Length: 281
Ligand SMILES: Nc1ncnc2c1ncn2[C@@H]1O[C@H](COP(=O)(O)OP(=O)(O)OP(=O)(O)O)[C@@H](O)[C@H]1O
Image (cartoon, rainbow, N blue to C red; front, top):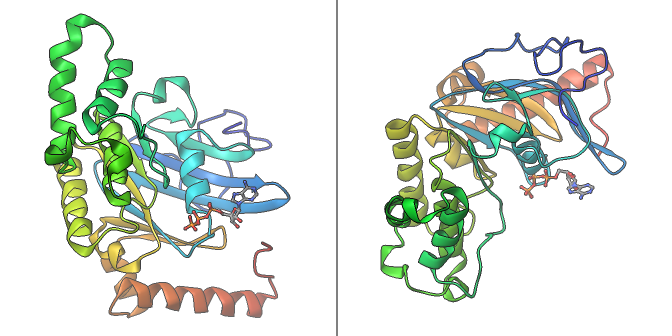
């Protein structure tokens, strides 16, 4: 399903003819000519980008632009993916990537009839089975619960938590295996400003202390300022792959939001000048 660009002689080696430079072996994610169709629609079109390791890359764009689809392709759960998509040096979806990637979907995936700790214990037992790992599991679970600031709720049933708290249980599950790449789909949606700030502090801690790579989607542009790098998307296409500073400088804008709007206008103008149609949705 992955890395099957027509004419690509070496799957996974990024030998396509896209506009992005060749593969960077140190990159966490490298995409070239990446296209995804869902039903009759082309929802991602010819994307080329690189996500550097050990940093937070924000994936930003309006609702429906294709952020979740791109994340699903990266973690290997999306069908009908063509082009090159390498993740941690392997083609996306490779079985060895399963334990190296943590993925948190928009809908929290937790068992409502288990407590926070029991949820974590369950997933920890899958990652590190056996009695001889019991102490290790206990430490990992306690640390993950503390990381997401749910220690005082460790014995509460997940079904009795707020939406934001349940999201944080999902995040704790993803942190359990100390993944090299964390893919977080709108992790701060619906959270109050204090929790949002605390989560972003946690993301920076994870990147700095564990050297993990984080790919975080959001449609809230002020969150862009908290990222090391940004992928700005619109209608299945990439408008920019840059740092927030470089984006603001390049567009002479005060904020990333203004830079994004400027890039949208430029893309429209270019499409009108060249007679290219806007992408069909
Ligand atoms: N199962 C599906 N079948 C066909 N099209 C789909 C399916 N799921 C999503 N799409 C379409 O794919 C496009 C991208 O959806 P996606 O969920 O990736 O966007 P998004 O940027 O993550 O949106 P949001 O911010 O609202 O979550 C949308 O136009 C959507 O209608």
